[in-house]
Length: 425
Image (cartoon, rainbow, N blue to C red):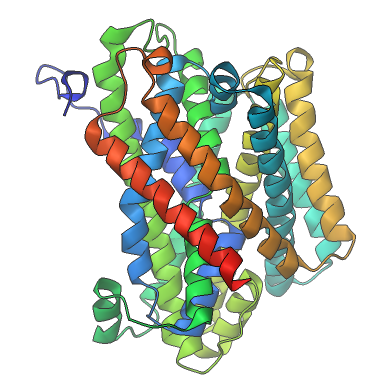
């Protein structure tokens, strides 16, 4: 542990909730409806056989998100702005284009899943619900100031506790614990494909951009706080907060993934319902097996986490594009002062709606989003590791050896996953 990270014994204790912000919200957003679909497929198709992957990805996810957060807090700029300063323009535009493309498809998939879940619960027309969800997301982001909007995002994370509740409604045998700790040895290509999907769903580029940008937003919104390059005396407090925030957020995220896999493994897989293609289908399949209340909780979780994830998907794209072109950025700015930033928010969300209304297969959209996210994650993670090790970017706050090792390990794991994905394709 470096000197700037050692706890200060004279500092008064701060309630845990005060420490939870960008990292906690980012972790919760990782369990979006498309992620729920992937975890449901894993549990339904392979039972408890992929539970170990949740434990495996947790430290890797924590490391790369801490790297993202530190870059934002130290430099006072988001990832795209830092990439712009240190890499050639074609590299920046390629990365941002991939991010924008993947996020737009993800928005479409998530809006569609939310609408399908609401149809299951309340009936009605899914196309109308898609438009209403999109309008709700845009209204929150554009017209509510960031200091008031951030608590709303934190509140929406409570929707994910629905999946914790469903675990207690089903019977999970000792076999689940064994397979959580011991990976099965198999050459089944379908199993390997699902493992790649779980990795791609868990470690996604939009999470990197969002957490870094939210560190910048919080720094700018808090009087007396400056980028750590300019105010190194603030480093100890913020690095401690970032670590706690990210550890809790990513652990919470993977706990929810574990609960979803456990629930679907114990019910759907046990009943032979292995062909699950969407989060809404998983919820519907639970109804006769786990009861009406479990079904309602599962469906409500899809809607709640979608309301959290869609603005984060659109927001991370807007931060990346606006920083690339040096536009004014930030959810704390009024619409008139950041027209370019908010236009990207609106365009990506509206395109997501149009993709849904065009009748494009949402499952194919999820597959393409996973492919693009997987491909984009590897170069982005490599770039992040270069930035966090660069004194020109980080000043005296370059990453520790331990953080570098974990970050590069996460990058290598994703590179292997992407290579495996193309081989299997």
